[in-house]
Image (tube, rainbow, N blue to C red; front, side):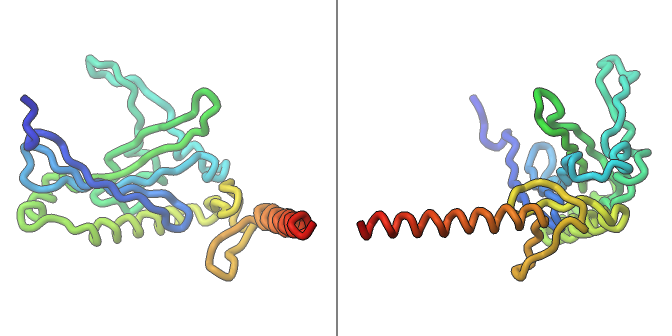
Length: 201
């Protein structure tokens, strides 16, 4: 019989800060009597300027372990290993990159180190604590790569920071995206006028 208390339970929060997507996970699983916190950044390779791609798209190596699984030396990858993680990066994974799907990486850290035990057993970390760490990590990424590409709010594509600007609402849009937006608005206005003409007969 499946016992509910033996199941793993997770809460997941996702969002964006400075055009970088992130994910926070709170996991409850035996034998721990406290929740396990982790957070991740999801970075499409299209968002990374060409000169920095090799720091993110790491080369695979075959593990010496009996499993022979593929591993990545993310602990020595200078940029992603120096993003002000909580006690260092502990997760690296590639997603996509096949069948025409764009390649992106998922990198993150956890709060279940030996030196976290005192905090975990005395009330544990809070969501606000984790969220602040996420913000610090993303800010550090922008500090190390000042020209990290930004996502256009209109067409979803990535552009160099100087190829767009924030609008009056604080939303970043590329110059190409703004041109597309204006063209769309003109077409919509024309369509509405045509509908009015048809209704009037």
